[in-house]
Length: 196
Image (tube, rainbow, N blue to C red):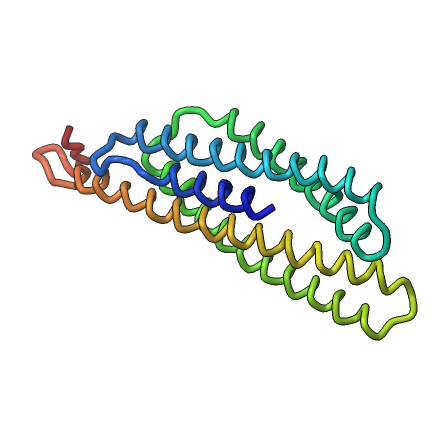
């Protein structure tokens, strides 16, 4: 599991390296590449968890069984969300400057929101784990599920936090594009000048 997390993190860092001067179509193509690479990494992680969790849940007992069971369930949902994201990313066409700015801003907000949501998952898992110590109603299940939710929430916290940082860094490349756009007055009125 540690090796998977290390590969997961390294994969996210490798998608963040790009040149400074780019055109708007290059900017959008690179944003899409970042998203597709991230979705591939998350889909691979989720698939591995589903397979391993299903096998391990059938071969263990007690809280360990429930831990692996929840890992498989959680990542099944995550894989579904990734598939949905993959299909919506494919449908994106050519974006103009305003649409690119809007898309970039919404992605950064999405990953920031998800990071806060991931903290809630970790806290919810910790609550379940602590509750398992005092309940008589299936404490092993509560303990295993709590441990899994803390782990998976932590992984998503890492993922979403890194994706926010990567997209924020990539978004700064729009500055170089915006520096070439200015409003000026002409003999016929006000115009938009784009320096090529």
